[in-house]
Image 1 (cartoon, rainbow, N blue to C red):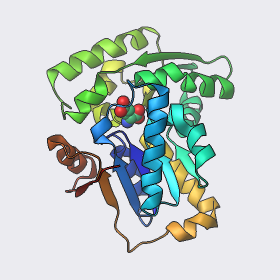
Image 2 (image 1 turned 90 degrees about the horizontal axis):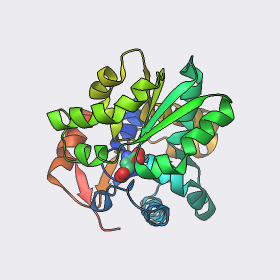
Image 3 (image 1 turned 180 degrees about the horizontal axis):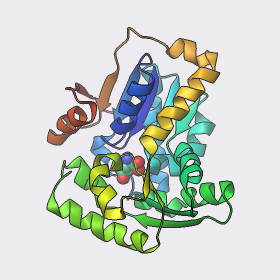
Image 4 (image 1 turned 30 degrees about the vertical axis):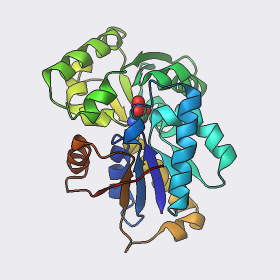
Amino acid sequence: MIGIFDSGVGGMTVARAIEQLCPDYPLIYFGDIARTPYGSKSPETIQRYAVNNTKFLVDQGAELIVIACNSAASTALPTLNDQFDLPILDVITPAVQQAVQVTKNGKIGIIGTRATIKSTIYEQGITARRPGSKVFSQPCPLLVPLVEEGWLGKRETKMILRRYLYPLRRRQIDTLVLGCTHYPLLKQLIAPRIGRRVQLIDSSIAVAHTLRTFLAGHADPAEKLYQPQAKSRFFVSDLTETAGQLAAHIFGRPITLEKVNV
Ligand code: DGL
């Protein structure tokens, strides 16, 4: 099984994208709702959570891990690679690759949690691949709680987005990386507020493409992971009122969430 984790429901945008591109590869999802948000916590704490989550997924039979959380990927990828002997894909590298491919004027905006923006991982990745690029970053700490609350179309969410996006608009970016897997749920609100000519990079879709390419090029573990009859399972560390609704919204069908203690 392919193991995927996030701090909450945001990583389900990645799970959905993978399900659409790699339908015969079942998933084990873990959303750490009890401890969300990660993005406002220290790197040490996020690393500890990421190790716990990966252990849980491996115990459930995961043979490949997708870190469907930018905050965890930006702080914990080296730790996970040190501690676990299995392939680990992250959401950041594919988004960086896509951003440098699509930008024309080299002005790229990044929105993400405080942890992700503070790590400067996007700036480093972008300027290494496209020297001379100008990267403008904006932490958006209020967006994850708004999404987890299901406030996807509320006036308050629109106002907060306008405020976060204004500085990036002024920089005349032509590409904006949604550097948090919760943000694809706000895409319809972000697009008109940043300007229709700005290309949005959705890291959930980017990582699904990377996974498909990885599976095509690696018979081991692809053959083990190919289980067309098996069903995906979705675990959470807390069952909130909105989690099930958001999961159904993302997948377009009811999703059974199983509560576990990790
Ligand atoms: N979806 C996570 C990310 O991509 C949200 C992090 C958080 O819980 O703050 O960064």
